[in-house]
Length: 387
Ligand SMILES: Cc1cc2nc3c(=O)[nH]c(=O)nc-3n(C[C@H](O)[C@H](O)[C@H](O)COP(=O)(O)OP(=O)(O)OC[C@H]3O[C@@H](n4cnc5c(N)ncnc54)[C@H](O)[C@@H]3O)c2cc1C
Image (cartoon, rainbow, N blue to C red; front, side):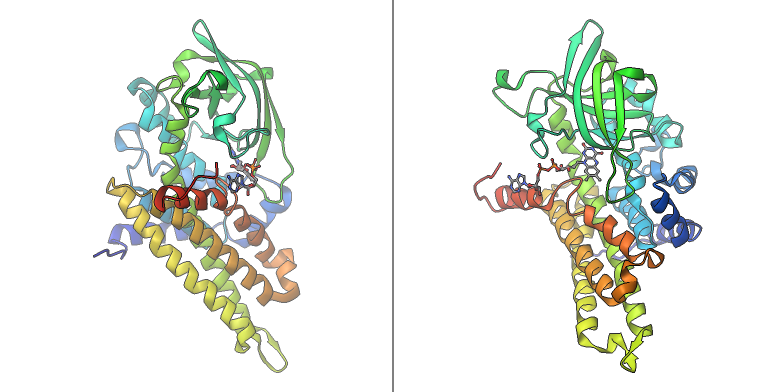
């Protein structure tokens, strides 16, 4: 029997995040979106309260909570109109260091990340020529004495200008020399404060306020001691973080979905046309209800995935399904909310169009739902692989 009722502590956590969000209401998010600004004040507040250190164990200065609690934090941010993608990576990028770094690296980096003195929220994997096919990345890290020299380029790398450190995936063995193509990539911690001209950061103009960049490396030197774990095992280490990330993204989508349903239901009851509230029309009411039911169903899979994750059980199927179902349900809710608002849905002042743009990302990144389907088809249902 699975019981997903929140514990008292979890309910209190939800309440505390809600209170923080009340100080950063619609006009705040509308303004940072319009100005393309990083929501620094909001992120700083969450950091000060310790919530972005939720997943860091207490011995490294964090608060040592589980993925369930971390997912509650991110869900609440989106639930009250914010955008958790601005800060979620500060919570979980450090997971690669925690799981695969040396004790020395953990002691050196994690306490700073936990208190927010150090921002580790940039994660450099995607490249223009490899896209989803990570094992094809071409950025190289060549060992020269006590350093690695990095050359190549990355695309869509978020929050580089708002980070002190970046977790970088680069090739340490040429693709053609590999028998196992999942080897040959290595994970490094790059100190962005020391990169200088060896790293060019070019901000990209995107549909959402996401602080995403193209990166160009020319002979960037990274001390060999910044290699995480074993050389050649980086892809494996990145994969190890995928379930956690998918559960957290699912929670953000659930938060978005609830925001859309709330706003849609409220507006449907208030707006009168043809002498009655538009919500009395089933053409308006039913799509909102459908989306609501889908969000609640996706949420159950999210709790199931999170609870398995926190018990240390295998949860690849549930984590992937939660991400798929929640991001689709939220997108469905976004469309119902947009339709319900008619022309006002497109008005910036109602926030629907902003959240509409923001939630669309969750079906595409950090992993596209097609790849989630491919995972489920291949690994859960045993069908042939497409990649
Ligand atoms: C706002 C934003 C922020 C991002 N931030 C980061 C970041 O911080 N760090 C980072 O490393 N990356 C980041 N990304 C990159 C993101 O993870 C990639 O966009 C994503 O992995 C897809 O790569 P691509 O865009 O090259 O798509 P492609 O690989 O070109 O794929 C295009 C489409 O084809 C589909 N497709 C490809 N192969 C198959 C297949 N075998 N079967 C079915 N469908 C398939 C894909 O699912 C997708 O829908 C970000 C992207 C965005 C948009």
